[in-house]
Amino acid sequence: DGGITQSPKYLFRKEGQNVTLSCEQNLNHDAMYWYRQDPGQGLRLIYYSQIVNDFQKGDIAEGYSVSREKKESFPLTVTSAQKNPTAFYLCASTKDPGSYEQYFGPGTRLTVT
Amino acid sequence: AQSVTQPDIHITVSEGASLELRCNYSYGATPYLFWYVQSPGQGLQLLLKYFSGDTLVQGIKGFEAEFKRSQSSFNLRKPSVHWSDAAEYFCAVSYNNNDMRFGAGTRLTVKP
Image (cartoon, rainbow over all chains, first blue to last red; front, side):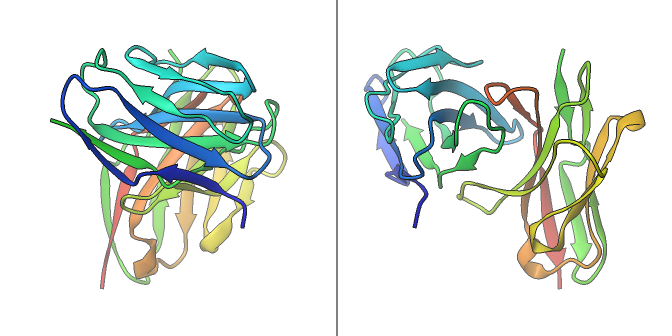
C-alpha cells in the first residue's frame, strides 16, 4: 500500500540536542511538507520541497532544517536553536507542485525536556 | 491578513443527531477549500474538498459541506453522527499548495 511513513511515533530528547524526524513516502509524489501542530493552533508550515535538492522555508522555519536528497525522503532536523520544540510534527505530500490535495503521515510526537 | 476561523473549539452532540461545524475564511478571492479529520495521535485524513462548480460537495463517511461565497463560509455537515465520528476536524484553505492555511480545529465529542 502506498503512503507516508513517519518514524518514530514518539521521540524524547534532552534540551540542547538536535533530533531528526523521518518522513518517507512511496506515492511517487513530487512535493513534500513539514507541519508543526500545537494544541489550539492548527497546523503551521515549517518547510516544503517541490523537487529533489530544493526546499523553501515556511512560516516557522527558525530552529529547523531539512534536506531533500531523494524524492521519497524529507527528513526534518529540530535543532537546539528551536526555543519550544515539544510538539506534534506532521509530514505531508502532494502529487506535484500544482496539486492542492495533501496526504498526511501519522505524525511524530516530540518531547524535549 | 489571510485567516481561517473555526469558531467552535469543542462541540458535543448525541449519537444520531445532526452536526454542523463552522468554517469562515478571510481571503481576497475564493480559495480552494478543504475539510480534514484527525483522530487522536494520528495524521489528517481528507474528508472533502471544493475547487469550483457545485457549491454543495459530498465527501467520505457521509459528510458534506456547502460553500457560501457571500458569507465566506464552508461549513461541514452530517445528518446523523456516529460514535466513530468523534475526532478533531480542521478546515483548510489554499490558493497554492505551498500556502495551505488551517483553522485551529473543532473537537467533536459524541454522546451515547
